[in-house]
Length: 323
Image 1 (cartoon, rainbow, N blue to C red):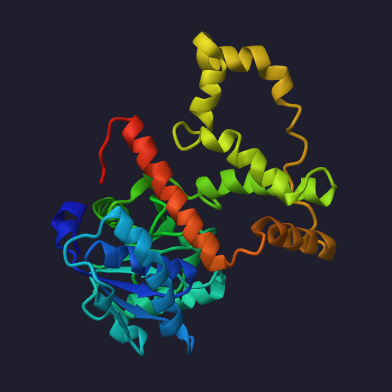
Image 2: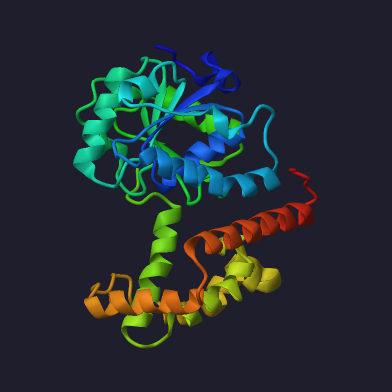
């Protein structure tokens, strides 16, 4: 077993297995294809291949706009009838099954049993720690979390963390591979329920649900509050540097010392509201109203164009030319 990630160069990987072909798995497949990899996919759903190819086709215009790697082609996707065939000859495995702990445990154990022992197996889980998912795998040392953000073909962030039985070489190799394929990687030092970015966005999401539940704000008002407010600052500086600037020349120290007492005013509702039928229906109706007749496919295309424009504008402002 290799001891360091340098024993296998991530640049030498040519074939990736995508296990699970839903929105996240399909997004991963599209990303890997656009970076020039051969992708072998498997999903037990009878209509999985048709759905997967639709996801890839839908992502391809945005990926083409960003720039395809040499040899990139949708034809490099192969959907296999069995898990064992999908991981055969794969040099990296990305699992993206539904968020069901028993399912994850069984599936990761099955992938582990069918995959060469020096291949890293990464899970796209958005909440489960690897320590809880790797309990039945024979070789948990090479199992890690590689948590992406939707859509994986467009949003660069991946959070990588191992479990109690994961070895450092697997965490480091996964991080190196993700960086090689163009991802922005946070390699976490320890497991944390929900990881980093999910915990942050879920805090905002819980507050949004509270405001809708209490009739304090509409869905559209909440979205506008972010898109036309702090959301404009976050692609450049995250929340910490944003508040650092709020302190003027004194920076974060002045901001905390000067505004400290008033900062506690919004900290009144950290628990999630009850998801009643009424709240559920209000959220659905609010989103339908805000969409104003635009289909999911139209909204995806709109989002992709805008995210690409934002990424390019931010890169240009920083003096980078990542194209």
